[in-house]
Amino acid sequence: MGLHLIQLKDHRGERIVAAFLDDVAWRLGKIATVFELAALAIERDVSLSELVTELRTDDQVDLAAAEKEGRLLPAIDHPDPARFHLTGTGLTHLGSAEGRDKMHKQAAAGATTDSMRMFLMGIEGGKPEQGPGSQPEWFFKGDGTSLVGPGENLRSPEFALDGGEEPEIAGIYVIDAEGRPRRLGFALANEFSDHITERHNYLWLAHSKLRPAALGAEILTGELPADVRGTSRIRRNGEVLWEAPFLSGEANMSHSIANLEHHHFKYGLFRRPGDVHVHFFGTATLSFAQSITAEPGDIFEIEAEPFALKLRNRLTIAEPSEVQVTPL
Image (cartoon, rainbow, N blue to C red; front, side):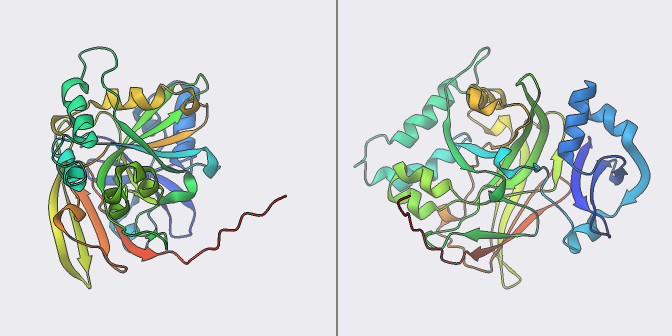
């Protein structure tokens, strides 16, 4: 197992970072957050692995206890939530077009839907041998105020028609002083969407994505394995309501990671020095596609083989809020 970075709190409530190596988690000294760790690695022009070797202490961290006691934190955050970007791409995985296509087929009266055309563009040009390929579907989810950590509630807006899980892998990035995206690694994520709103009209995709998103505590550094195999499940009243395998990694995708990264970071807006980006790479597995409706109190649970920790979050409904615009 390679190097994994984990954000959490210690027993005194202080933030720490642990390095998970060879099935043991070791506390890192001198830094309190992954953002600080990345900034220091960039400043010194060294790899995360080299810096971890220098900062690793002899103090072991009990991850199972930290999870049980609710001390795990999102894999990365930012001191200024406005400089933290949650974005993603859709129709990127083999099989991901099937559920979306079913949503729109009736309205299209049997014609090839826009969703299927977008998917086929990825199949044909999403893994170019060199240079950029076909651009994927892209969406914005929110800033750092939309970030949810392990064990926290996923709050669906009171106006939402659905609150459904999307088990995914997300890329974690920090922009250096020269405006270059620097990838720290990959994390488990629950992208969380309103699939009923999206089904009603695919032009409402943007509305369906403006939601909180959950991020696991753990960053897998280095390259993402080509074949990632995991399980997504929903628990209700302590029992498994639904469970299905999910696949990720480039062997199961219609786009390469590099192509998805290019089409996000080609915009100068997303290369502002000091910003953090969490970019969701998509999924082909949804309980909604199998006619499952999640209810408040249900627990989403996502796990995958490269990661030591599961991602669990409870579905809740946000309190109604009044929106009133007044002239100045």
